[in-house]
Length: 152
Image (tube, rainbow, N blue to C red; front, side):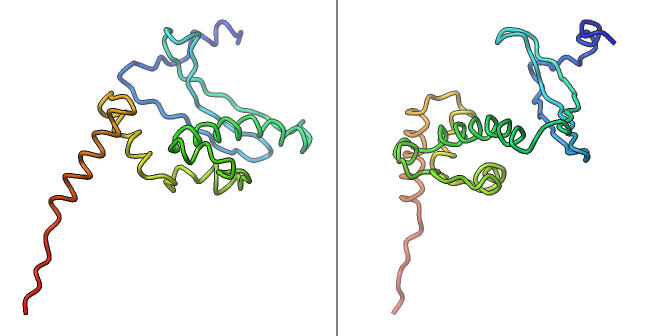
């Protein structure tokens, strides 16, 4: 099948659809990936499925390829941290790829920043607005804590 003919068979992803990429190791140094592609920021997205064969790569080439993805993931993690944490040179200076990059989505490292990001996504507020909303909610929650009365 030609490249042009193959492109016309990709499934369009609608604007209302939440698309999730999937990557699966098939064994024998092959990985199947389902991801989205588009020509530019204003174009329609399409679902693409491909099998990647890593059999011909040396160990060094494999690590060098993995580094691109690892750096992109680290940049994403760093952007999600508070500015003080992100700008600290000791923050993620030595990376354990499994725990720091692969499993990081399961373990929130900075819950306040995660809450701000969630508020931004849910409300379309900018970061300052989301921080203000969170601060107001924290003040309100603190003022509504039940008061403990000691009975003698």
